Image 1 (cartoon, protein in one colour):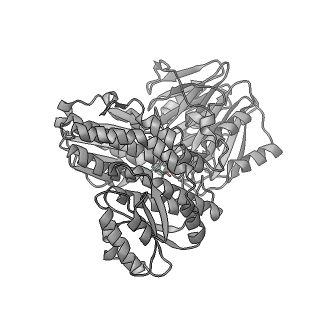
Image 2: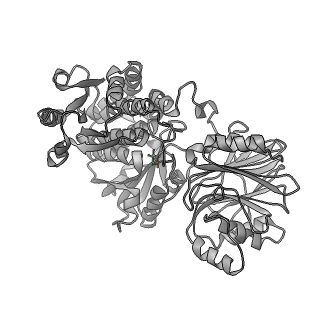
Image 3: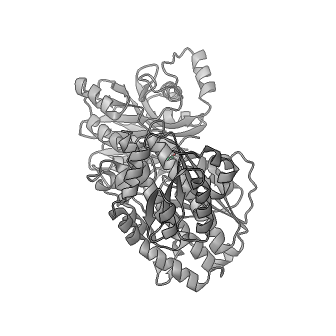
Length: 608
Ligand code: G6P
């Protein structure tokens, strides 16, 4: 999983490449490199570590030219070192290539090349492709790339340059994203739109299997038979500001504070009076009556939103709903039937496991929907309809605003489907719609109020080794997500548990200094969770209570009290997770962690 960028035009290519790579570092950041063509061959610079290391190399040993490709890497084959970093160069020194994805059959191809006398420098799968294309090259790079694609299995987005055609980049994709930026006398390619925004907002999303030939003069697209394809140009509404920190110390904090706006955007146009309006999904009662079961597919934080989604869908639609980790689903020999409605949940729309699971259910004839944040990404392009969360770019690796907007998306979907099926009455719908309307304001109030208990807790417990989070029903997934936030950015071990399960094991961990965060807002399981807290208190555990404003019982029990505004219980996971995001954030910053880029992780997992 990596970020790729390419440039052809009158500027110094390295400047454009570095600017683009900076916007793509969220895709991987263990090494980076650029290759630039200037008529007298290709020059390459690479560095291990963050992009700043590459910038340092370039400042001491710059390269000049107007055609170039750049890469920021998240290692899959071969450790992060300079040799394994991209761009890779072919055996004859003439071809340079960058790659995002995995070539699954690279071992057999490598063996074949070694038998032909090719010497390999790196451990990567990508180098194989460099040599293959160089061998196939007979004066036309486009033809050579296309010929080699037929031999590859796996996922890829490539950008390739060749010394003998130094005015162009040939790019292609299959299973990994690639977007082309159109300029005036200059053109660009990138894994994602933010890399282009400084220069252009005119974009073309490359379809699976298409090839692009990019020169100063223009961009030509081809299908896999090399037949010309018309360019479908769009103008992105993303702004560069949206991709920057806007004065916040970290993207994560900025994104936490963007939640009121993000939620308002998700709801916008989808509630009308007292009703939910899902017309954009083209769902009708007739189709829905044929749905006998719903399956939710997701990974990571999106999986926890899907867990809440299950409860919401079952409550409002009464259709049996199952939640699957997409990576499990793929290999579980799942039962798929055409009566199944599958909802894939993904911030990026590029998570490899979710995408692949989706392809499996599509092949089985199921109807598919996505809840997704990134327009034009692979998952929305695979499904029958998408509910975009409109949260704006999420750069921090730890997901925040994408999560709460996914939850809002599920509320809309569940109530909307429930109403279409006649299983949610008008009064209930009106009540939830009113709750949704209040959400942005309530979220803002929660964020504006300096949550003192959160900061105190972060300070007091930053040095513990373990944290327990408990919740029930709608807020059981909140416990999982709260624990995930803490572990991914602070590196403190944390577990999310269903409150009722404490006595079946985890209670054994509780003693004097062991902290448990109990998520107990108003709702039908509140009392039950309070009983679980009593059991912890009886064993002298420390309890941070997260409850609804004015809950006196919670106040009495709590060692630390965090309060959220009163809301419908179906909406409470949206408000309850916000203090937990902040707790993770403040704990991590106290510990001096790299909040936006935690070790070993990446924002978008485009490999299995
Ligand atoms: C990575 C990210 C998580 C994200 C997960 C799923 O692990 O670090 O924040 O929840 O991928 O990504 P998706 O884009 O499919 O929601």
